[in-house]
Length: 150
Image (tube, rainbow, N blue to C red; front, side, top):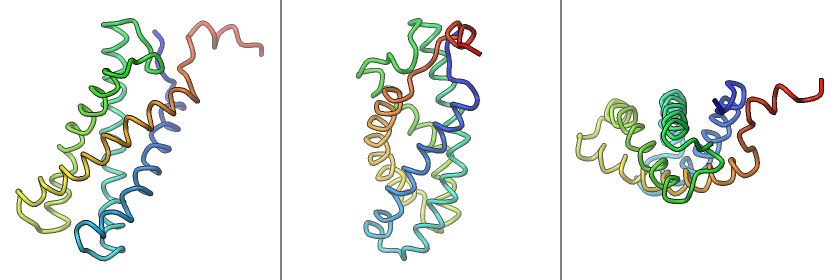
């Protein structure tokens, strides 16, 4: 099987979440009229909660793609990158909506609208991030790691 190693997955998740945090923190207060500190607190809580959920989603998606199409993540065609991005954000909504409800005290409708705005931003970011990441750090074949000079 050809999937990312645990170490590589950790690097990927950390890089993704750092970029997402840097993107969302300045925008959230501007769009929703809260202080920078309040926006940063919420985004930091969401980064940690969503890192685990996002990682599990990515592993499951990569496994399914490998089993169905015998294709590695770095070989994913554009339409499947869209499916990956959208499905990832939908899965993350299961984590983010409750966090928004608890942290902001807003109504369910407001939390869903906030989440939808963040989701739209992150679907775009997701597609760009994973395309660049997969291009810069392609998935190594199992046999290539075994044959590497030691």
